[in-house]
Amino acid sequence: MKTITIDPITRLEGHGKISIFLNEHGDVENAYLQIPELRGFEKFSEGRRAEDMPQITSRICGVCPVAHHFAATKALDAAFHVDPPVAAKKLRELLYCGYIIYDHILHFYFLGGPDFVVGPEAPPAKRNILGVIEKAGIDVAKEVIKHRAYGQKITAILGGKATHPVCGLPGGVSKGLSKDEIKEIKDMVVSCNKFAKFTLNLFDDIVLKNKSYVDLIRSDPYTLKVYNMGLVDKHNKVNFYEGMIRVTDQKANELEKFDAKNYTKHIAERVEEWSYMKYPYLKTIGWQGLTDGKDSGMYRVGPLGRLNASEGMTTPQAEKEYTRMFDTLGGKPVNSTLAFHWARLIELLYVTERAKELIEDADITSAHIRNPVGTPGEGIGVVEAARGTLIHHYHVDKNGLIEKANMIVATTNNAGAITMSVRDAAKGVIKKGHVTDGLLNKVEMAFRAYDPCFGCATHTLPGGLPITVNIYDHQKKLWRTFSQP
Amino acid sequence: MKTIVLGVGNPILQDDGVGIHVIEALHQQLNTQKVTLETASTGGLNLLDLIRGYEKVILVDAIKQDNGEPGEVKRFSLSDFQSVHSCNPHDVSLLEALHLAEQLGEKHLPSKIILIGITVNTSYEFGEGLSRKVASAIPAAVAMVLEELKNT
Image (cartoon, rainbow over all chains, first blue to last red; front, side, top):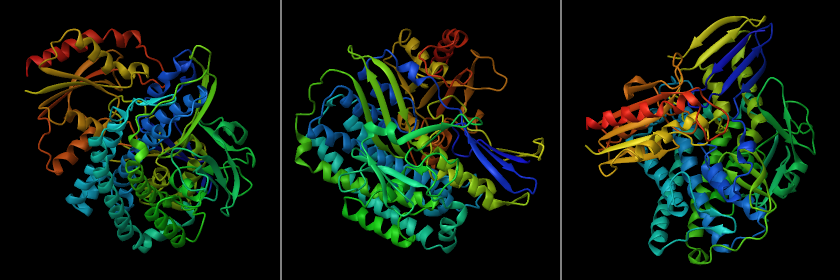
């Protein structure tokens, strides 16, 4: 058996490693994703003050501090038996919109988008934001930077601090909004809405009007027929901040809908011996290994998972785009992994509209932003992180200290799907021991679509390393090594 | 010269957070009126936001080297790295961010960026403390920052 190792992944320098195993004919037999997981969080949390969890957990991931902050805050609401006032919920959701704005913009223009804007065959050195500037022009880049910064600014105003908010408390938030701040946020939100529309047009022009890209999106190697999961409101519309977890099947019918507090009844985790990763699966369906189809409990979360698992968006512009995506790509569910990019932009449009609704809502000016907490106990909180469903689960003792903590992060929810997508993409480009040009990037494209976060809490230098590929023969001996310049 | 000393790292990931410990030690030894001391658990574009407007930047960070001994302290210039801080998979490196800012005609970029690196073994286990070797490197790193500040 030959093995090709891609290590690490360009632009995903969180120490991810992909190993591709070939059979004796030189075709892909299996591909696995291996990542070192950060360990010891449960132990680290024990005995800490419960109200510190939103600050602590926002540091466990360099990518989604805001999502962790609010999953933790909501778990504390539940643990302290308190329902926050309406104004507090809306302030939290508004802050959350700011986070999705900067996160989704960053992914499209800096990480996932370059594959399309610059092209999947372009050299790695070009497939980045600088390549995007070359293609789309300097003025577009200025808008990208400006609106990403707006998203950050919105979270900083509401959260008290950029990147790592400090506003979430059990029962509410610590800070309201002044009139000036409301005006400032509104102006930024209006501008972000225009930019979201511009970005969807750009996606149309560059991707959807290019037949080869559409063919690539719809091709078999980038198709995965798993269940879909996401938070929905009571009308089954996408909601990032609250609702029920809905799971739909391969025909877009509802399989189940449950309160996050019952997650252990619906989601189980499987550990495979060759990987550090836990693979969650749906208990209702059961574990059939890393395979798709209706008999396998594999599912995916994140932008495409959310759109597939819902029945639409609550805002008019995003709803229109939602319908257009499903019409264009052959109905619901869309199983094309690369459609994650389109789904992400539809969500970007949605959060700009939703943020405008919230900032114009009279409730948001209320000074009543916190309710008193009750006696502590067990609490579970859920939010939709940019990259998918995120659950925090705490046991708090009578002194308000953490006894036990557990989390299921978005990338863990997607672990099975990512592994399968990588394998299938590899199958599409490695045939009979022949490694096609652009192979590595095509495999990575499958991976990048999910916008995963691995080992991303480390900030140790130098971080990036050139890509290295090891190919082993059928006896697992190193056959060839490739490195990208 | 308007200067910022920026300690980068994750305070709950053991030795990864050494840059933050160095800034804490500097607070006790430095008249902070003239120099800004700051910490950050972030990378790329967010770091760019923090250093914009300063002429000189001294980054203090944990560093992983193939032949390095944990606790070794070294001075680097930015050009010694091909990529700085893209450990975070959802961000660009500081170098990329700086190139981008230059291309966009940004006017307030630092003219000098120095890095004081403390060699660590990457830890994947949560914890607030530092290993013995890395903790004992803090005085040397502080001295190196102070020396660097003399030249500003």
